[in-house]
Amino acid sequence: LVRLRARLARSQNALGRTLLVLLSRDTLDDEAWEEIEDTLIGADIGVTVSREITEALRTRVQVLGARTPAQVRGLLREELLKQVSDGFAEDTDRGLRTAPHGTRPAVVMVVGVNGTGKTTTCGKLARVLVGDGRSVVLGAADTFRAAAADQLETWGARVGAQVVRKDEGADPASVAFDAVKRGVDGKVDTVIVDTAGRLHTKTGLMDELGKVKRVVEKQAAVDEVLLVLDATTGQNGMQQARVFAEVVNVTGIVLTKLDGTAKGGIVIAVQRELGVPVKLVGLGEGPDDLAPFEAEAFVDAIIG
Ligand code: GDP
Image (cartoon, rainbow, N blue to C red):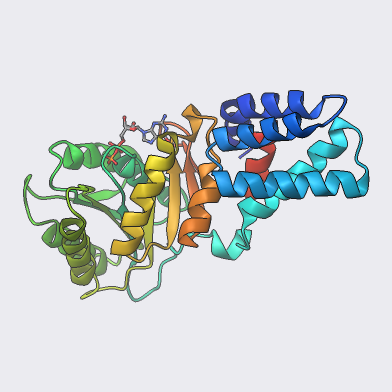
């Protein structure tokens, strides 16, 4: 975890440096506050929230008579933490419901637009669970993208999880059904279902994901629907998040590619918009590059 913190810090610290320079000015005048707000907006925190944070900070700096950059920075940390925490309890709300139920496997559906890192996230999550001594079935229900099933199979072999797949173009729901059946029959702890993320039409997506979910639920309840969002896509990602949230009941967000951007502020925007916590972050392409989201570590990484 320490290593992950350090890596998060590395990707985020461009923002931290900018803020630090701004907060170190002798006088924080209107212009400085505007620049602070713009810096937050530039980190994808969103216009409204950036304004709220800046206003709250400005008021507190005045009321408390904060003088030193360290004091101002401390206050900014508090304001950011308030927004990032967003009323979610770290242990309960951000925890994954992947524990075995005894009578049936825990089921996790992974949804999101193609290219966001869904398949990779399935593989990495399987790795974490197998590392905890759990058995895992990976269901390759993304039958639309030619390489997705192969990719998942590679992950399965790599991390020690079974993979259920069918030919390209097969009915995604039938793959999901078979994966969960394998999980139930084999008394497997967790089934992770990778899905296709074609955003061609909302009804098409709704039909497909809805069917997958219904078919899965004939055998076992779906414990988690994780929406995968690419942190580098900014407001575009927000738009995608909205569509998916309308289509399925998202229970958690996985923010990927946080290693490649200083724009992690989308965490705040997406949690607010969907009312769903970010549970995991992707920090690279390797098997160990998935970390639980921690509000404090995240804020510390942002402000450097
Ligand atoms: P899918 O189409 O949503 O299933 O996306 P993939 O899992 O195939 O991922 C798309 C690309 O993003 C691949 O090249 C992955 O290796 C890469 N990727 C996925 N997650 C991360 C991450 O957290 N960080 C980085 N840097 N790359 C990632």
